[in-house]
Amino acid sequence: MSITLFEPLTIRSVTFRNRIAVSPMCQYSSIDGFANDWHLVHLGSRAVGGAGLVMMEATAVSPEGRITPDDMGIWKDEHITFLQRITSFISAHGAVPGVQLAHAGRKASHASPWKGNKPLQDDTAWQTLAPSALKYKDTDPDSRVMSISDIQQLTRDFEAAAKRALAAGFRVIEIHAAHGYLLNEFLSPLSNNRTDDYGGSFENRIRILVEICEAVRTAMPADLPLFVRISATDWVDGGWTIEDSVQLAGVLKRHGVDLIDTSSGGNSPLQKIPVAPMYQTPFAERIKKETGILTGAVGLITTPAEANDIIAANKADMVLLAREFLRDPYFPLHAAKALGYDVNWPDQYTRAKK
Picture 1 (cartoon, rainbow, N blue to C red):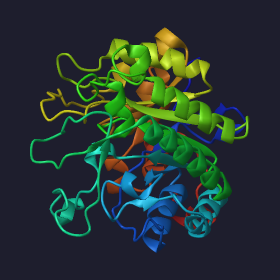
Picture 2: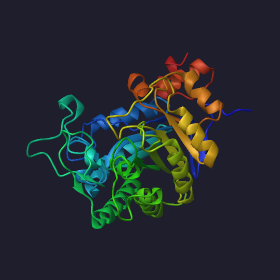
Picture 3: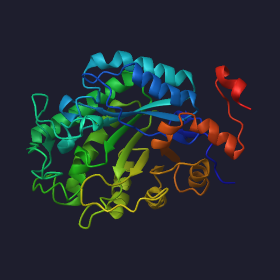
Picture 4: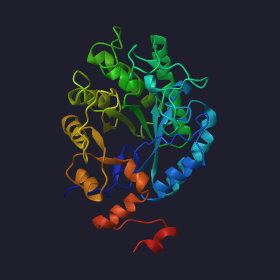
């Protein structure tokens, strides 16, 4: 019998009530990295709407790791208190709270999308960091090439952020190594031309991610899940490939990673992406089948049938929805009805269930 979208999934000690996750989505609505009522309502409504996992957006492990000045942060203890309010609400409504820890690397120090999405030019700008002196776009400012000391500090920042995330009540931690941000920049030969232990060979380019996974895994209780989001391919000749991703997933599995959240692209403006419904799902399927690690499928999954088919065909273990959750915070409740499953609704909403 095939597994369905609404069958619970247990990873370590955490049980998700279904296979539907809210993908991390930047809200660009923070001041000094603090969460606020917008995040409570945004994330809380998706928990009320029936998601199994509600993932906080890319959350910077240091101030310079933010994409924009409006990004969420978890680089100081003062961030914890309001996050506890959010995780408590999510948990109270049957979902599992998760957080994506991130550093934007050379793509940091930009204005938010609705403020122009350009590199900051005034006194609000900060020095960006990167593995190499290679720009994402020619118009971007120069990044400072990270020293070994910087890399060691980055690992400490991720570890400290993970400890704060646990104190805040998150029960899943995801490391962001996709979309052209710092860890993805180390992985890809398009953005990493280092000649030391963190560049050159495949083993050297993945070293920083492995070290961070080890540090975060050590900081976590053994019974909580660790995810990693990757870009399965750069979609550029000579760049990172799905074959690299399969090899990386096998390594990460041995270092305590439980699920590969499988996205793609974002590391080069030269990328050519054949966008179509579920276009990234084959990457999740291949990684799952060739390594045995759990995977999450993400990317233009918009209908209940698509989501259910991914799980039923064993192409992935979880589906992560982003834009569809922006359109419909109650997608899981509506999907259950469309697919013929009887799921619990919040008591306050049961009058509208039929």
